Length: 113
Length: 114
Image 1 (cartoon, chains in turn yellow, blue):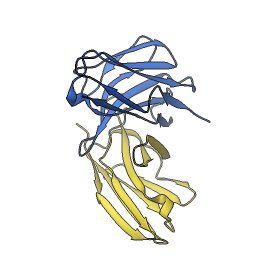
Image 2: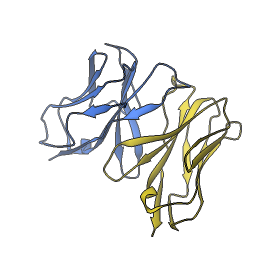
Image 3: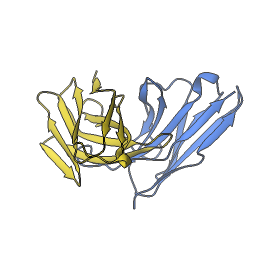
């Protein structure tokens, strides 16, 4: 059964820093991997989707990479801002269950002004 | 702009009541999902549907049922609500391509069962 781990569980950085969030998964048979952002008490907002055949995707200050064979993905946030404060969730689309997403528990990011 | 809406943001019910949570998407998506989210446990899949009138159990279906009579609407039913079903409920939808299609979430319903 696919297991997803996100490290660190929480992170606090000063504004302007570049940072990396890590995600690892146990089964490399995935369709894709999505990164989401969740603000307190709200739903999830999709940030990036990387297909299994891709190595990375970029959107603005965000860059996500995928190394399927080693079961790892990273989300790089450049020049962090207080508005980036949220919980970030990683979710591979599981190859064994019709592409259904399996979620990690997230990394809670706090960016201090 | 893609949209997944949920019928209520906050709901308070009593133990034993029948509870309906409704989700509507306007993207003509085939796949729809219901999750619950609890502190320390993350998101867990309750039920999903890949077509009208079709449903599949997720990881934690006990105590829940679902209905999908129309493509755009997916309902979660708690037949007899219990206090351990107090949680944040999230609906999501996705197109047909498991590799290429982004999954979109609704704003969530915070359900409290007293």
